[in-house]
Image: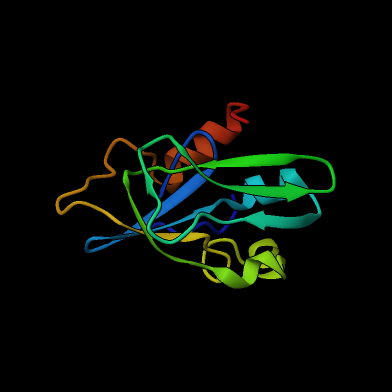
Length: 130
């Protein structure tokens, strides 16, 4: 099993979210990065963009595919990992820390209980979830 953080929640479409008070940090998982292959571009949302749960937040492009990143929570973009537009290395090497994509301001009390924990996400992958 990969060494995935246990303080984040996972989606079936391979995004992760970590709640820090009323801020949600969002990224894509190591599985998604691995399956995209060599990354060439990250299209990040504009600051102030409002997204609903399940709506497209960003796009990650590789030499073989373009992957849409869906927001695991509803919120407003307050910060993006701007350096990823020019250099995708942090996302490729450290998707759970330096490779985060966006930070969203979320409503107080936002819950992520309906999303998978690390063990459930691994079971999803083991069952062929792609």
